[in-house]
Length: 168
Ligand SMILES: CC(C)(COP(=O)(O)OP(=O)(O)OC[C@H]1O[C@@H](n2cnc3c(N)ncnc32)[C@H](O)[C@@H]1OP(=O)(O)O)[C@@H](O)C(=O)NCCC(=O)NCCS
Image 1 (spheres, helix red, strand yellow):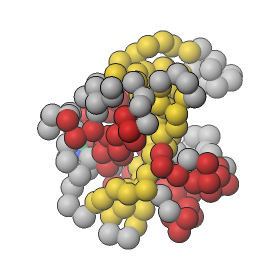
Image 2 (image 1 turned 30 degrees about the vertical axis):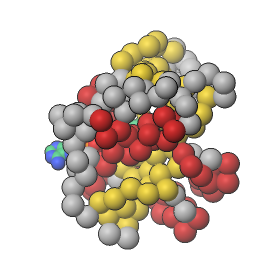
Image 3 (image 1 turned 90 degrees about the horizontal axis):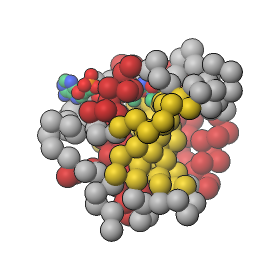
Image 4 (image 1 turned 90 degrees about the vertical axis):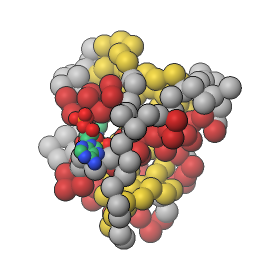
């Protein structure tokens, strides 16, 4: 049920003015701003992580923009030899939420995974992050396992997954 094949009820269209493309070097500073705004009060990736991701995994790194402003990003990474792709990080700035940006970024990440022959998309999410949980459930993700202390003390994570139907 990846990407464009999803029904309109699960994958709402991006609102006019928004689009999604691969991250480019010129976007990196803006992505670090998105990270700070999207994950305010939470543990952040260090700024260099995004430049490094662009070096290592450019095909799995997408940004959403509104006019010229970067308003969200997603990073999809491949689990070596597992057939599983990971949604490593997804963030949208508060002012541009509830317009389909997060869902469509996720769909782009899944399409990338399918193109790389992955069978399943997986992710971990803070079990208290109700907004993200609702988004992932609506997109068809189901709980695989609760991982207690996965990210250290107070770092419980819910492992969720979605079978990528476009995969061979
Ligand atoms: C989780 C997050 C990425 C969602 O981003 P988003 O751009 O708001 O996502 P979407 O717009 O695709 O979907 C969010 C809601 O808006 C609704 N929506 C989308 N387009 C809409 C539209 N045109 N009209 C009305 N509602 C709409 C969706 O139905 C969805 O509602 P629901 O999940 O309550 O059913 C964002 O809230 C965020 O960055 N949170 C902080 C970081 C975070 O938690 N990241 C995930 C970590 S695992």
